[in-house]
Amino acid sequence: MKGLLVMETGDRFEGTLLGDREGLGEVVFNTGMTGYQECFTDPSYGGQILTLTYPLIGNYGTNKEFMQSRAPAASGFVLDQISLHPSNWQCGGTIADFILEHQVPCLYRVDTRAVTRMLRTHGVMKGVIVRADRTEEEIRERLKQSLPKNQVEKVTAGKPYTFGSGSCRVSLLDCGLKKNILVSLAQSGCTVHVFPAHTSAEEMLSVNPDGIFLSPGPGDPTDVPFVTDTVRELIGKKPIFGICLGLQMLSLALGAHTFKLPFGHRGANHPVKDLETGRVYITSQNHGYAVSDEDLPESMIITHRSVNDGTIEGFRHRTLPVRAVQYHPEASPGPTDNSYLFPEFVQMMEEYKK
Image (tube, rainbow, N blue to C red; front, side, top):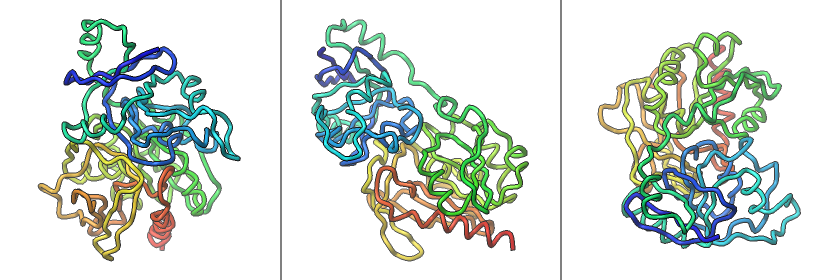
């Protein structure tokens, strides 16, 4: 069945619908060459239509081990070619069957690089995946719908649970947790107590953790002020480490501000400079907001910046055991250059106990 990706500007891209599902979302792009299943199941894509720039998707199939959450959170996928005959010893199925099983709107045979060029020029924007036989009035009515806010509510855990059996106890606030964060913490010697996003600071501290971990997640950090309030209460109580949305929440709690990037950072090859060592790391990233340099609190020392656009990619607190990074050291997908940050968090907790 023929379909369309129609932008709020009126621009449209033709393709083929996989199945009959239609969807509305913020159209974004990811430039990674591999890791499509990890991207599809990353909760941070909640409410977005994800465009993959790489032209062939599905050539190594799918595997349950690659899942970063129980199901895709995105509102839709825009792809070029889909491989129907994958070849890999770990292959457990095709990407087409995966998308159909989870009933995610998908438009393929699309010139995804043309979509990406448009978004780089005009910024991310609202779009809809629809059948090609929809009338202009039907398409306009769908585009009038508001984009969903507070995606954190949709992707957070339904109830507390525990992962791992290490000697360091960590209370993790789940705003859109990826599986490999849990795996990375467990491999670093942690028992992780995972709490839903609405959990109070008191409850998170009730398990007597050695440290607090703030997860990534979807959307605008200012849409979930209740999380910022919780983080503000936790600062100074235990060592804290945050990733992506976790960094933004910490920054807001400390008095900084955030802003929306024109087209975000989404891919597996973003260079980040460690300002304290001068070393450049290649990082996996997935965020549409960043912390502003304007009116930064004195308590925040910037430790990392993007080589591409100079935006803040990491900070530490001047006096407290608090640090965060905007990029994803857990990768999945992407390079594992930054996995050392998990053992460093454990070291920070051990030193705090002395």
